[in-house]
Length: 447
Figure (cartoon, helix red, strand yellow):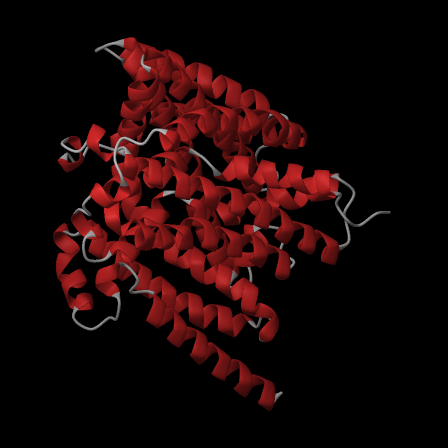
């Protein structure tokens, strides 16, 4: 049996993976980053690419190198309890509680609401019902996800997006040099871009989509573990290269269209989605709204399909015998439908603290999976590193939440390196890793 994907098959897997990753946040956050970063765009874009492209790519590499079947296998190297708690928390975050509802809410807010007038309640309900009916249709056919996302939805989305971005690049409203950096991008553009990458959810999604990619590769006839790992890494390179290119172009368009919405940027409620709407109307008029509606809806629908599929398959494995795959898919789709109607801004606000808690844990777990072959994937190294990262993640959560836990955040800011930049987990995780290595070496000597 041939254990190597053809160039066409590799491109198809890469297209599918890109389609799964590139959702609502991947459209709106690079756009607003470019508008606010201005002349600091290069540094901010590098920060964004680290967390929104580099970390997801490392996540795919981690799955391949560690020969993991998915997040359950990888997180199980820490402990069984951690596996269940972290896996459930991650999938619920990128699934029915935040990411899937955000897909529908973003599609309506950016693409459809400008077309339906001042009273959007009933149109939103109708739209989300139709949106999730289509999502459930594809999600109930997981064996067809490679075709439905890789061959059809993703190319259609890229066609619509390409029309908008290329037009804006050819006819820029202003030059990049004329755009001042604002807010946190004035003095810490790299770190602001780094943290903006958290909002795309890709650092978490890379651990969730690994199982879909691995199974799709096996469906194409590649079953030998080493060949599956190699194909997984190659597919990741294809998809992340495309994501990085679109991020850079989108951010540049956001900066070069600054004049169109300069006064609105000061409003905290103004998002990259609003910027997209302004730009599309400027270049295409009412037709631009239709193009935008089609672009955003296709973009978010393909991601929602992947998330429902990944969540259903994972919970089926975590809780065998409780429900079959179709029932899990229906439950996750139904919950997502209800939450999506609370509104996009509320969903984003509620998800922020959870992301600052989970993203550091996901990044550390990914790095452990890559380095694991160096220490034999010894459990003590995983336990010490993740234990230290967990403690630091709690402090990161306190920094974002504030209020009654602000004294804890102020205490951490006084001694924890990089804490004010949102990277307070780096040093504790590194120290935990070092302690784990020492304990592992001592145990091996005793043995």
